[in-house]
Image (cartoon, rainbow, N blue to C red; front, side):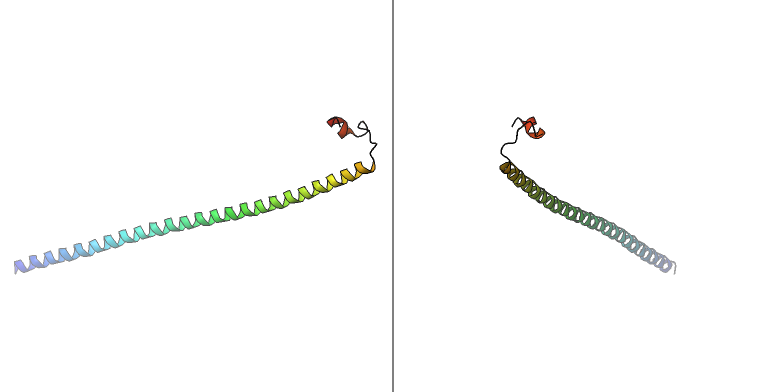
Length: 105
């Protein structure tokens, strides 16, 4: 009878250690999965922020290109206007126009 009780106790200990090992492995797996999920979520946030930054830079570049084109149109219009004024008054003295006197024209 004593051997039977010892055998049962060994069986109990073996069962208890197996259940304990399964719980420990399950906890470790859950912890690993949680860490992996958090790291993947962080990468996703980083990628979304990079995409948002790239979109903002593209919009800023498009706006800058539009402004440069507009300024080029204004400069061309001013140059055409200046050429038309000079063609109408060929006898302008350089001393009368301060900008021309500064350039030495």
